[in-house]
Amino acid sequence: MNDTSMRFEADPNDSELFEMAQSMNRITAMYVKNKRELETRKLYYDRILRVMTHEMRNAIAPIVALSTDIHDNPGNYGEPERKEAVEIIKSQSEGIKRFLDSYHALTHLPPPEQKTVDAACFFHKLQKSISCIEESIFTHKGIVDYNIGAETVLFIDESLLSQVIVNLIKNSLEAVKDAPNPSVSITATRSSDRSLITIVDNGKGLPNEIAENPFQPFVTTKKNGSGIGLFLSRQIIRLHGGDIRLHNHPGKGLSIHITLPAQ
Image 1 (cartoon, rainbow, N blue to C red):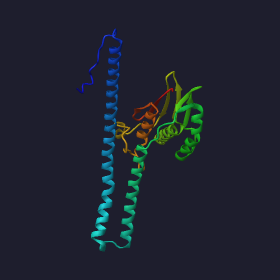
Image 2: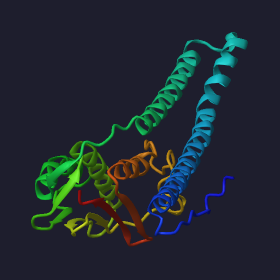
Image 3: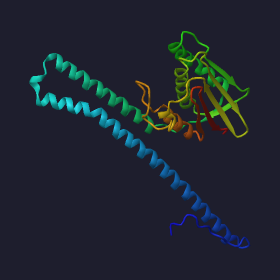
């Protein structure tokens, strides 16, 4: 009857009927959960497709217009004009390829191969990459401060989570570029049932157009940004069975909280 709120009741004294009712209730709960997940996933992909359609139309329009004009009015294009037109078409085509490469990255994430990893060792391996990013933005290192709890372990796919952490720290370093006393702090702790990684910066926080929906893909204020960093990070964290939350403090900075299951 498609009534997922229905519950099956049975007399506990009738063990066979009672177990059958319990099984039906579990099946109904599983159906509701899976249906909700499918609906949520559909909403995300519908949104992605809408954004993709919009961006692709905007990128293709100049190519179509320019190539049509060259075809219809070849006499208007001497060597300098043709060269300029080809440069425009090349630039737009490369932009479309970058956009499609970003979409491919979103839809072809491998399942994580999780194992228990010492948090201190994990972040030590990342320090070289993070130091290189620091040097490309600042004239000195030491902007990033690490606070890793003693004996903290993470149950992760090192490769995938490294991609997330480096991307988030890079964003934080870019955010504090113009801060009077730039600072990015990384903390890793663990409780009995979960691990927590926190990244805090003292930049200006997220701009309003991003803060309203920070995980929406293909939306960015960066000149050469793809707009998939935060969305991709959340997808990877969720594949780990965890979650990521942002706390925006306009004019004061941003804090990122990643929770991961202990096992």
